[in-house]
Every structure is written in structure tokens, then in C-alpha cells.
Image (cartoon, rainbow, N blue to C red; front, side, top):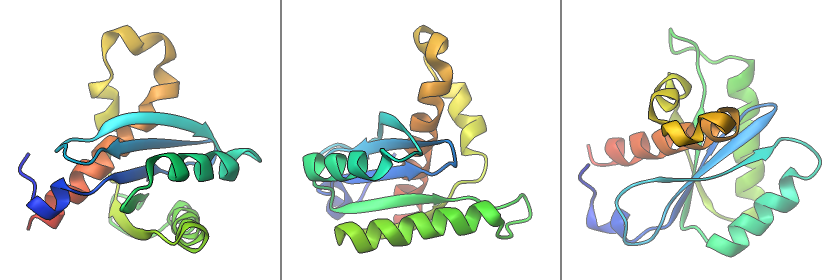
Length: 142
């Protein structure tokens, strides 16, 4: 994947929002690809854990997946992901971008290494976040 010089210098976190779990991926500074980072439970411990990740990684940009139905229309899950993005932006003063996440979970399942198959559910959301981030970077190049 090609990447613009200004994107290459950015550290980006991507979130695959879900009601039960949130997958997170990172594109470190000076790297051109996303890497799976962690999956967090969407419970009372979520926001302190996100704060810790943001303080640790100090991202220049945060990308949140925006789910839609197959026709491209908003759903109840779209609204929840957008509300999550608004809370992230308000809480951490980071630049937030929304990225369509159509079929990312299906594509993520294809990417999971065989040696991670025993904890597949724990990593699938991280890989979906990687795909969200890769799609964001690809669209930014257009």
C-alpha cells in the first residue's frame, strides 16, 4: 500500500466499535501498515483503558469505524459508533475521522493467523480495526 509522506509520520489508532467488544489497531509513526493492538470489553472499565492507551500511544489521529447496512444506510449501530467517536473527540481532544467499515469483520476472519485460532474471538475485532485503518489510509490517498 502506498502512503503519503504526511500520513507516514502520523501515529494513528483505529477503533472497531461493538456493543460487547472494541477492537483497536495502531499504525505506528514511520510505518506504513496497521497492526492489531488490543480488544477491550465494552463495559465499565472501557474508558479508563482507552485513556491509558491514548496516553501511552499519543496518537495524532483516531479513526473509528462507521457501520452501515449493505445499502449504505445508517443503522442503530451507526449511531452508537458515531456517539462513541464524539465522546472520544470530546474527552481526548484528538482529531477523529469516521471510516466506513463494511464487511471488515468478514475480511478480518480471513487474516487471522492459524496460531491465533484458539482465541479467535479476542483478535477478530483487532484485525477488523486494522482493515478500517488501512481503508482510511487508502481513501486519504485519493
